[in-house]
Image (cartoon, rainbow, N blue to C red; front, side, top):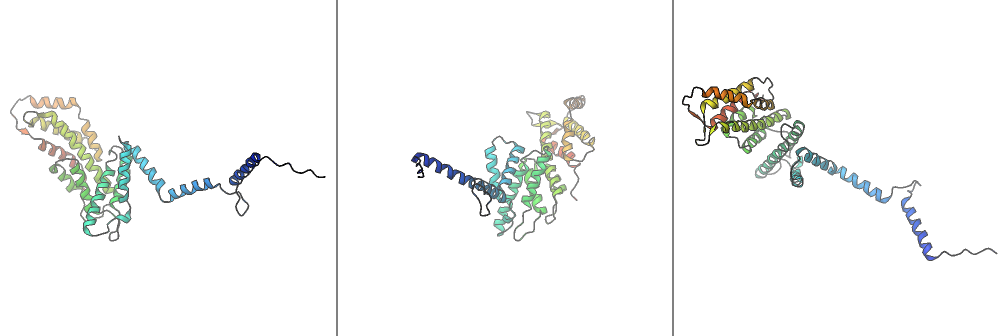
Length: 302
């Protein structure tokens, strides 16, 4: 007589059934008989694909690279500002609408382009050039009534904004703007755009350094400098610029930095030997003359 199977305790049966379910989930089979991908893994993969397809992965990567380039003191605020400006980058948002709305959009684009241009100092060549490219793309976005590309009017307006925000006197920067601006309806290629942006930023730094030199010459009580001393400094600066054969704007700053305190002190001593009365030189005049030395080295557009 066959022996009857011994029934398992209920607790042991529950444990066996639980193991069966776990194995079935981990090694589920498709209709073709091949093992399928676990549901959790498939979900994770589909989420990664979605983020990649809609551009979020690349956008986050670009944002983190910007943080590494700029190294801001407040990274969270930097990222918030970065993503706040992302909406204006899409070409679909460009140029459409009535003139008032179009004007507002243009001002927003200019502000966003300026923000990108200031992310890295011009001495950080790779980062600065990358940001110039992003600014150019932002300003070149097209709308329903406008072909893609950057026109001379927008380019010239951006040059003016850079100089105005840099607090350089208008009479100092006006000669440079006349030299590197483009006509309103003229197409501005990226190379011209990059050269113009770099030249403006370098001029602002050059003028700031000239202002620091003037403060060394200035009489605190009269707020003016001795003309002989001012002219000696300008002549020495001109000699340093002429000795530099390179026409790259950034090289002009290097030439000015070669004005060591010893050479300036000797030149100033020679100017004061005569001890003759001298007319004053104002800060505005000194900065205009210093900027003229810089602008004379800049090649005009076209």
